[in-house]
Image (cartoon, rainbow, N blue to C red; front, top):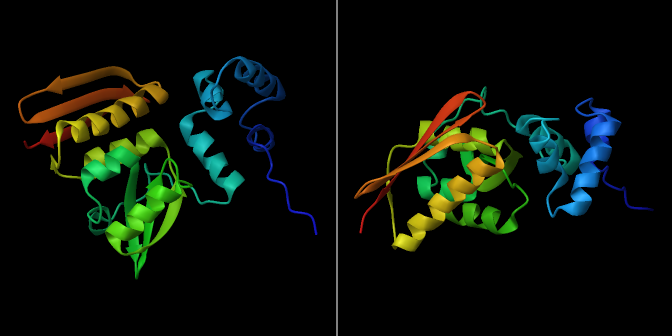
Length: 202
């Protein structure tokens, strides 16, 4: 029996009416000259938004997708991971039922992160695809300010991850406001202002 081949992302985007054949051909031409993923190129071209991209990725990989703009986030579930871990890995738990923890992730196929989540939460992890910007926004909304344990390198890693995500999602007006004990990061995306505060203790 032959293994079922996974449908290519571009073909799926066309099938669901998200892009045209001409747009796919243009994106593939760009991809041949750039070391970038096809989905990011299509988002940069303005052919699709990141929500459509992650919804189709979920269909492609057989992993559910969650819209964090409409999904209620259970504070008890979110509290099972610390804010700095959520920021560094671009994820947020949004529901817990029995021993199963439902987690929105920009990369739900990262086995190392999934293993870390199971170790930290002592739960069975049910991963979902979600928009990276929506995850960052949800983290800013649902977590209280907390200190980032460890050295300055730990803080830099979290900050670097947040900035990388804003750049990838073509966020604008990125503003980093440092102070003695805190970093405030503010940026615009899809007409919304997202604010993230990271506290540091020495």
